[in-house]
Length: 418
Image 1 (tube, rainbow, N blue to C red):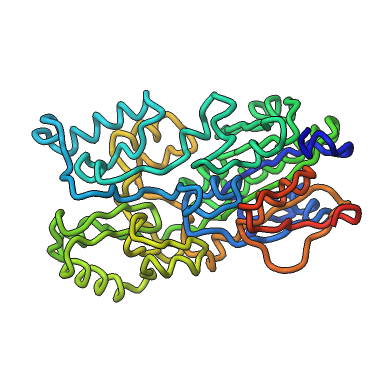
Image 2 (cartoon, rainbow, N blue to C red; image 1 turned 90 degrees about the horizontal axis):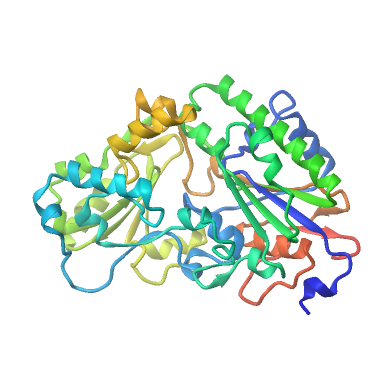
């Protein structure tokens, strides 16, 4: 029997993971339920990682160098990139458009906006489509590392939604399984702020929508003898400026063969193939006023202990309020499709640059993360917490022993279960 089966008082746990739920926007006016819950129940801040994809670390309790999911890695080996005849002859605008159409119908295909020569240089490590996979076993492990869903003893349950009306469309789907742990990833608040953070009143109203959903979910959890956890891994910073990296590299005279790079909205990673290019670009980055340049070994200070250059040789993180545009997720056709098909992203049609973003270095207020446990029998544990503590906390609440590969500790303490 598993530890879960042996323990008679095991609880059911519903983890509502709302990326982008900004602590600075919790108020009696916009989020009365969450504001009251943070007075009545234990909650704790934790430090996240400088990344736009934190889910794998949240559910495995190990850093990206262990579970292997952190954007892209440079493909090893000296073999040249091999392009098809169409990729060699057609303009990049056409080949990337073809990739985008494939992306829409093939959920295993990712980063379609990157032109083929650059895209084939990368080993793409992302869980975006894995998380939305209909197979129940898809998230029991990531990169060979078991997740809290896999360790819970009976498979757990995962729900993803980006609904703008979660009370009507999501609430009926949650807290319905027999599993000990259920993870709901509600992405709509994150997406809404990305494209509407220039309208603070509208954002406040959307927080109210999410707050009403959480109140309803808490009530449903109580009726089903389950405990609710609210989990957020960052907030959002309003955008005040953008950087055109492709144009800057061209003006610096950097040839395509001299550098490989992967540009996210708020950060970029480089691999240099000539000392001259490395010196030129790093010198230019060091003189920029709105960002910070880090070597791959320095990433250990921020929770990503890289031992080689496969994930990047240098990393440049923009300050909060700044984004790269264009970046490796932008394509005009995809931008138009998303703007037309999703009311939350309608502003893409006027200006395809984000209105809000995250993914900066963790000392930024936009990166403040927190875990709220709606169970008054617990209290916050002593000491600081970081993202590696999230998975051990979930297992501790389930009365499941923490595996040896997790170095984190539970964030909360119970009088009968310290």
